[in-house]
Every structure is written in C-alpha cells, then in structure tokens.
Image 1 (cartoon, one colour):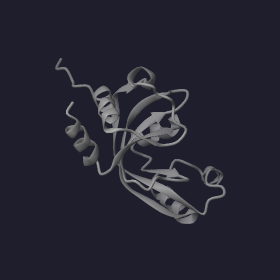
Image 2 (cartoon, helix red, strand yellow):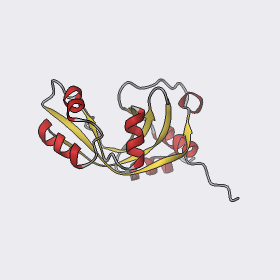
Image 3 (spheres, one colour):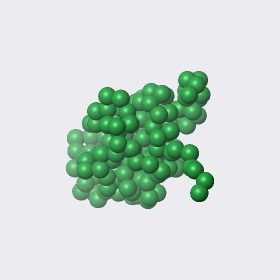
Image 4 (cartoon, helix red, strand yellow):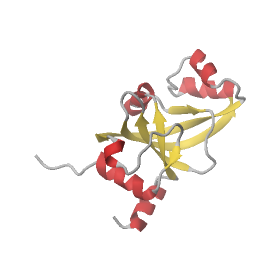
Length: 157
C-alpha cells in the first residue's frame, strides 16, 4: 500500500491510531455500542483518532475499532457524571478504586465503532507483538495492516 495513502487514512480519522489494551468485558460493551466513554487515569497530549481494541486475557485478540469523538479532562465528580450519562460500564466503587489518588482524569468519548469481521491474533498478524500494558501509538503501516486483516474484502457468495 502507498505510504502516503496510509498516512492519509490514519490522519483522516482525526488523529493518530492507538492500540488500547482493555478487559474483554469493556471491549464487548464498547463494540456493542453501550459504552460510549472509556475512562483513563492518564492520556497522551497527542490527538488520538482511532483506538484499535486489544481485548486482553483470556481473549488476547484485536477485536475492533473505536473512533474518538473527543477527550475530556476533568475532576473526578464531573467524570463520574460523564460516565453515568455515557455508559461508562463501571460501578461507583470500581470507578473510585480505579481513580484512587487522582484528582483529574480523562474520559475518551467514543463516536462510533467497527466490530472486526475477523478478530486478529496479534502474535500471528503483527511482527514482534508484545501485549501492551498501557495504550500505545501504532504506525500508519501497522494500522493499515490491521485494517486489511480485520476487514478483508467481502467475497460475493
């Protein structure tokens, strides 16, 4: 694939592509469209346009894409309200335990999702894959490879 086209595709989603490790429960809620905000203790300053969802153990596969509408940084009471209004997928107790020690945190607002036609085993699909412990940016070339494998052309029946 032409690298300029790959860069254009990655940039056309409004920012960089990021691999997001996430528990299977939350990945399922995001892909079902019921979880419209991903809560994070920290978030990079660079603009993120699309999240490649890596469903962690026991699934351990790339399962879909979530396009980022915007990222809000706010104090925890306001973030809890955002979570409640947008299907944050956590209880108040889970929220407090996860955010312990933080005064401000982030809500990654999800615009739309695409469920992978083919879930990917990243160990077989990507060179030198190591499961990330935190969100990590991926290159345009890797993003294009993921797109090609997650969404292969449909063959007419």
